[in-house]
Length: 518
Image (cartoon, rainbow, N blue to C red; front, side):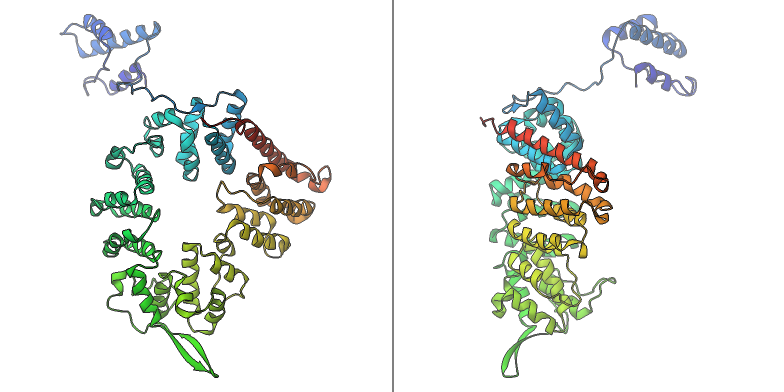
């Protein structure tokens, strides 16, 4: 709002009803107004003459200062080399504006490897992108440079990037920063000195609100070890249910913790060996009563109204999900595959299979995930096959994805499969050349069909899928498409987007991989 507009707003109700606050003017203009309005000048006259002074100055080209704040100190000297190539800069602008995210992340990784950072004109775009898309922050931070850090300090919305370029952690970010800044500070300190980070978190932890306690406690998952046990044990009595449960989940990852020992003793009491038909058989029975000390370990006696398990199954489920998956083979002497085969013969398969599914995903226990994926389904246990596939190393994931893809549309449409494949695939993940060739072959083969014509997810997923193809395999994307015929005309726009991404990736690699990091 201009000073003249501000003055008009002040006198909108009339000077007799409300005394106006005249805008503050720089010294020279203030002296001019004082000369035009002696001390005994009526308020109405002073307002009109002030308006005249402001209008005359505006006609003469006067521009009032944008802010009364003192100008910030200049940015620190840039340590990286900002991109100067005009074509590359324009390509980066297009990526920041339109994505896809996997290609944005790849561009940032290539810039980092080349010892480069974003050109200054793109920094506001990058900071706003990181504000809206937290998953990209890790890729964006190294390419913001000193100017990006300086700019982030000028707008609270960009606070997520403050301090990222500093080699020495600024304690002020912990003392006075936003929650996101404090999480970033704690995470960086945790990676450098796990003990110091834990001590810092313990100091004043009880004075934080529940949301802050839970958010900061999550950072202990980085570098978690036995030294964290005492602090986590103390949090089992925290006043926040979320904090208590989070502390329990972290303790359950420590196989030698006292928490796991207590949970293991409770579960061991539910297991027994019985002799049936001349052989020993492992049996399972749920607790008959809720233990007096169980609440001390964040177990809940009363189940939610929406919970389908009965009371005894609910108690069993909570104990089972708190145990590391390695506990079961160690306790029973059975392999994961044998335990999955044994469980349906008990009366408590729904409770324990649910618990196993949660614990397995928490730990990314690949041996258990593989056993579940090839075993017959357990009655009452409907698991997300893709979530279990994500527990596997990438090479093993590809084998299961191919089985689903090459099975055709009997279970999933191709677009749905690719969307789920990409959903939790890390931005930096690179698929194997053989897998890429086989997927593209199936996509091309299915294009003329009606099912592909109405598979809108395929058109959304394929461009992002191309971002995960090895750079050496990009040539496999450009040829072999059954185009130029009426039944594949619908795919023209998607193919254009795919080929544009191929060209963008080629440009990025050819331009940035030739540079040497300083």
